[in-house]
Amino acid sequence: MRNGSAEYIAKLIEPGRVHRNVYTDPDIFELEMERIFGRAWLYVGHTSQIPQPGDYVTTELGRQPVIMTRHRDGSVHVLINRCTHRGAKVVNDRKGNAPRFTCCYHGWSFDTDGRLASVPVPEGCAAGFDKSAFGLARAPHVGEYRGFVFANLAEKGLSFEDHIGPMKRNIDDLVDRAPAGALALDAGMHRYAYNGNWKLQVENVLDSYHVPFGHASTVNKQGVQFARREGDRKGATVVETEKKQTAASWKERKSYIVGSGHGWTSNTALDEGKRSSPAYDEYRRVLAESVGAERAQQILTPRLHNSLIYPNMSIMGLNIHVRVIKPIAVDRTEVTIYPIRLVGAPQAMNFGNIRLLNVTHSATSFVQTDDLEAFARTQQGLRSRLTDWVDISRGLGDEEPDRELNATRGLATHEMVVRAQYKAWLGYMREAA
Amino acid sequence: MDAPALRPAGESAVDRARFEEFLIAEARLLDERRFREWMELFTEDGTYWVPSVPGQASPFDQASLFYDDRDLMRTRVERLEHPRIHVQTPPSRTAHLVGNVLVEQADEAKGEYVIGSTVIVVEYRDDAQRIFAGRQHHRLRRDGASFRIVQKRVDLINCDSAFEAIAVPI
Image 1 (spheres, each protein chain N blue to C red):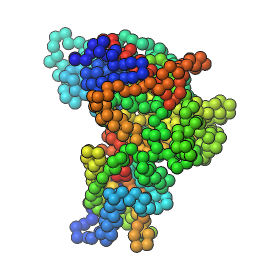
Image 2 (image 1 turned 135 degrees about the horizontal axis):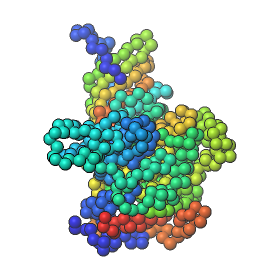
Image 3 (image 1 turned 135 degrees about the vertical axis):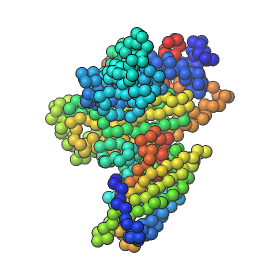
């Protein structure tokens, strides 16, 4: 590999800027697959996708095909989707239920915990062939918090608790909105792709600076975005119409960083008092019945907007969904968006959430499509060799500790969160695996 | 949707041409980016649905590529008219081809019809060209001399794949 030395990698990241090669160099991308996606905790899926024994979903961790299964003893397994015989991908469906997984090529058959169950024509196996050594490879470490399953493909590294601990409250913030205290990711998915580096999407999920400009087409002449939540009459005020500038309330939004690259943004001020619709009112009533009026009020007063669990997933709090980022190549990325059903909430409330997500974050949506355009144009612009640096210096030096939240705080229109992502990036990338 | 029963050879369909002409005119509005006029083809309770999985039973409990009622259609069209819609700078150019038109259900008394067809859309934008293809079902209601759309459903053959941005209706 041409560009793998620690000296070279360290030179790509400076305090307020990043070298364009981190987005464009195929060698750097290969190293990322090895050093970040090969040893960071990665989000795999949610246990609600595999409620019954034999249920499975397939996905990719980085570029590696994996199966997340529910074994008959109830345990969850994250298995590499590759036959241990000659290497064919074993499971081809996105989801399903099966008592065993049988490879299409020579018929090797694996149990739902990955164990090799049977080999056709076993008398042909070499002397000493040990079936127990030919189970599907498995992620060495798997951790779960409130249904969210993460895996680490490296033997050694950060414990799951150290990874997820600082972000537990962000998961709680979402799960607690469900009257039954559980989420279901069973409403299908949106899948979109763009010709750009995976980090462009990662950086974007906590980027509040781009909204008034990047999403100008979603803002009406009064500076107000379209209503994005069940029960809202209108959306957030993002532009002051008279001065045509970013609205003051928008500029006051905060962002926070914790752990290795994680972070979140505080909520936009929305008119919570006026939020009302038959579905929303019924939801509020059911939630109060389940957790008490005071707690329900707390839960329904949004504090968190978007949360990033570095490097491959985010929890989005306004149009609630889980987002998973899959690098394909240095200039190609796929993203999967999972709508969330709040278990115990009225059906109409869940249906409203699912439906509005179609117009906010699908490949056809009003919001996401302009981001995809920005990602593709960024990748094109970064081909320029005369300007090597990407500026991420907004608010540099303005970060301050937030002792109550045990986090570092800055303004959401600053770029503190991106700098934190590159600090984590460098931490993974400078050391050989 | 179930395939329609095949008619015996020689038995003519109910005046298929008038439905075919309507579908061609609808496609023309999209190709000419006359989105507001396209929206006006829908009834007040009309919906435009593009499922995200084959044979999707409901637009409510599952994600869809599009499931617009008139309110969402209006927001979509207003955005398409916005001067700073980046994903339409430059705009898409499309060519719709509608064929294999079949009258699948006809209730002349109520003036309600379900018309099946096949659509191929070629889209060009910013040096890239791509193809969409699928089956359409138009639920139409007679309105004077013409029809209005109660539901347009497009089942793309690749509905569950990952898409680059789709900014204009299929």
